[in-house]
Length: 221
Image (cartoon, rainbow, N blue to C red):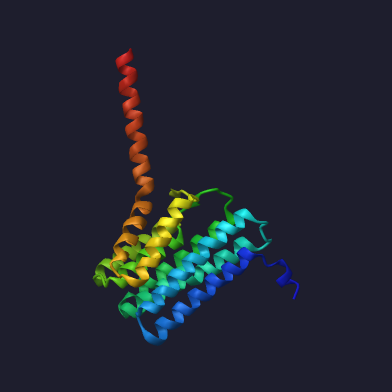
């Protein structure tokens, strides 16, 4: 039982993340696409966010990073995939691809020593998929979106790690509101979509600054 002496508060929240994710999966399998399943998923995102915040403020455990990825694979990999299949069984190939690539994404995260993220975080992908299911989008749109998200998770595009307290507070308010109002899923999609497109926006802005600087230098000459 030595393992319990090594478990930190952040690790306890990580386990809670996994338990919420498993509960959401179980609820979907037993009762279908009801709000309770989505609420449990949102609770898992809260636990995931809190464990990261607390881990930065306290002493890190020897297996916190690995434990976090295992929990995320349940809540942000298995749950969205299960949700897609329950939404439409014909989505199974896309759900399987989403799950496989989310696991690959998490495994690579554990190996790489990098302050930001390589590939789209699984949490963002899961938020997009669950929101699309909840607003009952067209089968083809969901299939296409999950296909693109699967490859974005394993691509070499760099995504920033968000640590701003205000950003976390905004996301928390949106997710809490989404438990009661399905319309808030559009706000989730908007925020997740902006983050997903951020590398492209950043690249365009950098090219624009370079072009502006070249014009300014040419005028000075």
